[in-house]
Picture (cartoon, rainbow, N blue to C red):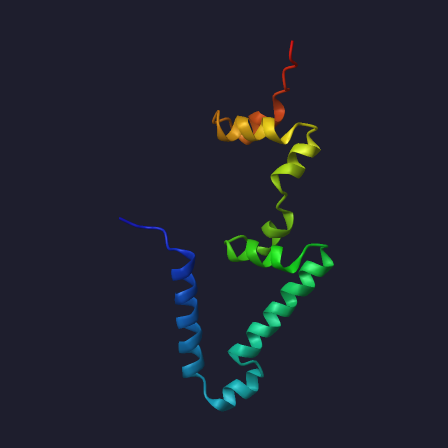
Length: 118
């Protein structure tokens, strides 16, 4: 039986891979690459900051979305539930109840008009 790998386990495997790569490179190869793992991490973090800044999103928001497993493109395109409801001119609470309590699909919840009272 195959099980899902947790984010913690995935990060541990990545760190182990980075450690192995660091141990197998000679000092000359590290200098030739001019990018030790620590420097690479700083560069990646700074580039993520630049991407967030260019797209008008908070760095920490983008960082946590990517950390959850989204790609950078998905993280930038992701819309909060409230803004999706606002774009469809529907009340957040009504759509939330349809999806979470009644088990409707998001598409059905957004495209079915809300009945008036009375």
